[in-house]
Image (cartoon, rainbow, N blue to C red; front, side):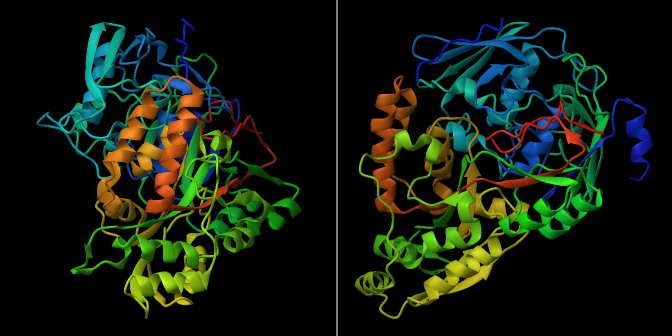
Length: 532
């Protein structure tokens, strides 16, 4: 893909927010859960990203409702000829919420905070996105070679290999620029928690975080985008139950449901209420079933280490019926991790796993399990865009697997612990998914099955990793399509994270809310949103 350098060179909360501005009411958000952390670069979950997008700015951003990159804290991002070096020219005169100045030194501090694990103070979060996207931290063959201050308003990022999409990566919600002063004051291992809060340059300022209940945000009166945000503040309430979120929306207790997704069976109730309306986020995700390939699990032989067994699982699950039942017209199933908008990257001869219980039984017998086996299947405790309600989907898959002799024990746990255990490879099989961060297949492959994810499933395929590296360097769509087609064919045979669904997430809002433009990337800053 050719890159063109950018040269666009309430517990008292109501009174607190009202003091900031009188232009509209504060936005009350119904979130599916609380953030894992407000420490930027240290998380990978949507609940954290949504709140971080309100309090941080990024070097670059996406135009509302699109995947097109635009300037933000960086006025320009200029790669060299082979995209091994990127020069970021920064916006001057910007202040963090704590009053300290944004400059090149602050940007380098943030990069080091995310990536440089050679520092004595480095804190590595279990949910960090850095090893997934950059294949490791500084001491473990990261794609990033160095980050250097050129002058007060310029930073150079040097890569160990070409990275043609680096501008898109730094526009994602993961990499908000935080105040070095705030991080140092809190301590790197404590920053971004409920007790220490967080400080960025973004449109809203964190005032309080009541664990398990809500986060209170206040408009940034000194925001560098003049006239924004339009709302005087925001209250992010944590409401895990989908029916409770819809009930609160209809009762007027919340104004919008912008995160996760609602089960599609809530759509009739939303459509029947004149005071609320359904909102569909453009489909840009994948929900998958992951199978751990380690030889032993919990001290015993792991049947899923056998490719025939994984194929038996794929043959036993009626994906088409499952998607038709739970998603209707708002979901599709195929065998590929990137969504349909990237179908140009699929193999020329597209195929999918065929539902065939008898074939599944034969595969099990051939693999040495004529009577089946027992396995654990973990399902998510929260609603996500790809799996709005994971438990009944897990129950349906367990039923299909039981029909061929695979006895499934369903399990779940707290969301933060769930993500930590995925990263640590503690699950035999589990449900999870991904909402794209930018419009390139690499964003659906490297973070999901790249070298940095090997511990999750025990999957380590040097040939596939080499293809990913080559595809990341490719500068034409035709070359990318050729390489990603090969990647998809390998994954079809290896069956690591089996795609179940690509969905159009169902969200909702009050009719009185204006200015929300939901894009394909999962969430967005609510700087233009107001409530009548």
